[in-house]
Image (cartoon, rainbow over all chains, first blue to last red; front, side, top):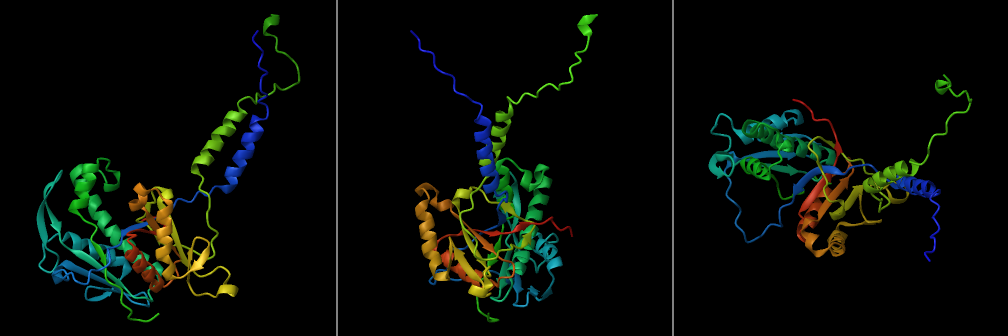
Length: 190
Length: 156
């Protein structure tokens, strides 16, 4: 004789789920963490020889303790930094005083002149973090804009909209994110 | 034509609430998925700077946070920028241990992917940030992320 299983009353289901819902509503934080991603260099090896980098291949950016910029050989401005960095990295007219390019065979792009330029960023201990991030942001923007331009030219879409990993790697190889931070020095005090 | 005669009862028909649990469940799942529990209580004031070239932090579980900023209770702790790890004020020397502990809690396969997010107030001087970065380099935590707020890209 099959015993009849009593039906469970589901009337309070809504109440229970309401309770849970309110709990998650209260504890939730909707902020998405975002930021500028960087890769720190490994600690310097004292025995390793200092790499020989030609002067024309280095774009010096210095920020002093009162947040003023010194770009290459004169006072700089945060508003023109992006354009200057772009010109340095792309060197459209193949000028003698801007970085050399080396032809490299990149899968997916073929032969492409890769700039050997390096942006060297140096800041003081007294520089404000806000200014430092602004500078980092402008330099990153310069690289991103160049990548976008190349990507549009080759693949017809922006770099951030590329979906094929091979294309992404190709663009990244063609325009490397070459921002280097100098070893810290204490110049201007705290 | 009595068939088409409208019922003239003044009552409104009761709305069926049978699908209410389903709706609530849907909302519940949404919030369950999007929620992140706040693990630490902030003891320092952090107003991140704004930047336009930001990337989203992937894999929240593989991120450890370092907070740097002026203490919120400035009467008790002064206004000098302090470093907060987990729930307490620490110095630069504690960062190595903090990173080792963070690595311990993650599965072995994921340890190389650990990202350190620096949540730094915009008024902090770079000196302390540089010290922290040097310390991170020493322990091999190379992947870092400067936490920033999203700003509309500035057109030149």
